[in-house]
Length: 296
Image (cartoon, rainbow, N blue to C red; front, side, top):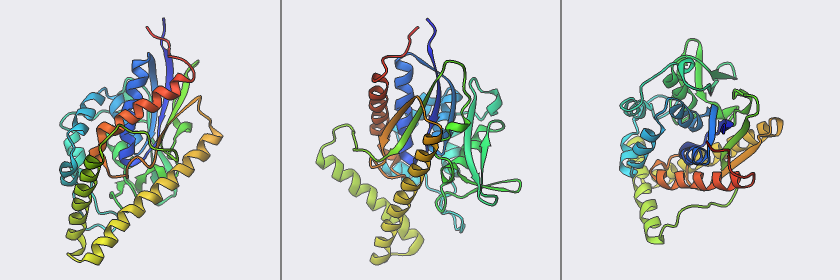
């Protein structure tokens, strides 16, 4: 029997977007066939890696990222447009994911970025998938923008964090959207209070050291640095969630899968295993409301 086709849309959300991996795994486990995919920011990254058939490699690598490795992937720059270049991350990804042209992928794929000079969306549906992903993940003031011709490209979440209007539809498909910035209660794997405190303490210590390099060893400045990090996380989360809600009102999906924006900050990539399981659980719950997908 033919599988139920799915046109999948993945929102941005920094590290929270790792939950998309769990969603995709659950869709496949339940017998759905993903026939097209569109994403913004981290959604563009996970969706793009899935489209090239290397999601298991991405997941395996993410699971090795403890807090120290995440910190070591930060390549500082003195650019006034952002303080992280992102070159280290993409160089590492090239070790297990070969760049391809989007038009040569097995399924239609779209990644959304924003041209900050023209104040408009730029949708990548052809050309280098690395270029598309790199542009889409350029978080304003954090990761440096991408220059492409006369365009200066930043994170697509600024204008369209849920690019439902850019996914390729097929007859009788299901339109499934995944929002990793939902204002809902966090549902996550059980972790002891001692383990949780240890993770938070170590991560905050590295963030303090990071800003120490930027701003000097001053207690007051370090406190401001942590506040700045938190501020970016909250502003991006609120902004992208509101935009996504507006887009879904205009283009309602058949199924909406949601994970909490309170699960972690934009930069907590060391929580990969927990985030994948959150995505899996959220997908199982949402799909359960309509019954299982058609299996082989």
